[in-house]
Length: 95
Image 1 (cartoon, one colour):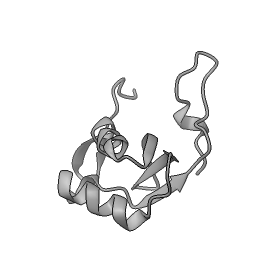
Image 2 (cartoon, one colour):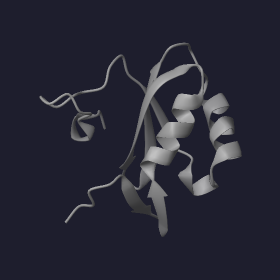
Image 3 (cartoon, rainbow, N blue to C red):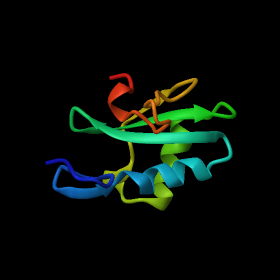
């Protein structure tokens, strides 16, 4: 049975995806963020308000979070897929 919160276990660590998303959205160049696990790696999906380099985001995250919580991949989207109820559809995010 899947967990009802956004906590996942990755390489032996418990990771709160919402914590990573909160740090990302505090950056002035990021309007919205969603983080998932794909093929045993963290992937950050971003909607930017201004262009931000991956290296800059990685540096911000490394100052605020442990290394195992820093996403390996950053994907920019124009908009997030939504369910009919208006919630983020994590399963519809691109692989």
